[in-house]
Amino acid sequence: MADVLGCFHTDSDTKGWYRIMFDLTGEIAAVFGGTGALGGAMAQGLAEAGARVAVLGRSEERGAHRVSTIQSAGGQACFLSCNALEHDSVAAAHDEVRRRYGAASVLVNATGGNEPGVTVTAELPFEDIELEAWRRNFDLNIAAGVLLPCQEFGPAMVAEGIGSIINIASVSSYEPLSRVVAYSAAKAGVLSITKFLAREWGESGVRVNAIVPGFFPGEQNRRLLFNEDGTPNARGEEIMQRTPMSRFGNPGELVGAAVFLSCKKASGFVTGSDIKVDGGFLATSI
Image (cartoon, rainbow, N blue to C red):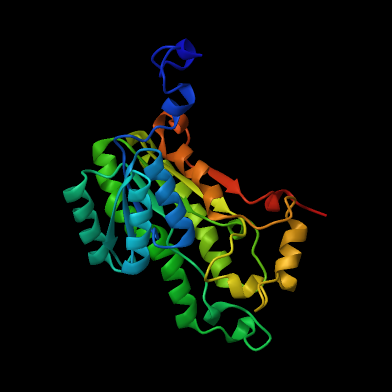
């Protein structure tokens, strides 16, 4: 295997071929949305694989907690306050990453979410959604979730001739979900932009891929999935019935995909792709 793949040392290498394939020692990762549950789990996973990680987000409290957790486990990380909706804030964060660690070689875009103002309900039908609320949701999921970070970090990676960009799409990128119409439309855009950038930057050596999470309960979507007593509501039950694994995901289950896409030895010929981590949700039909 070592001769075929050409990236291992010897059969006696104490790290083992699998650890070499997924070793991120020397890599520098910027994780937008690293203060959230999903982004934070991926930030921690990248650090445990050896990367130096900049946790980017608006909550200093959650950011400091994530950094402390990473450092307690022996990893290297820092928190940088950043509003991904503002170009100057993203640019300043990029400068600080370079000042502290050097040129980022991994960019994870985990900023995004839904909001009540664009969630269809009996009291708020589709035709009553306000344009400003719609725009805010697109700004959050596309401008902050992909556009501004990629515009800032992407050209620097292209100039270096190496890098991995990981965008966070959704099962709703493929199949619009009931009630969350703006979120579904925006996440479809995330997947489209991912493929566009993979084509634009592929020759430079920069890879652009997406992770497609299924249903991972968090602060923003908990009220859509659970009753006040913590039991799944009708929507939550319906989702689990459609998910072959009959459960929701937990944030740590995204780490393997993030490490795989970050490591050039493991995914050096992977770009414009998406990895579904959805318990089989998109594989289900009637």
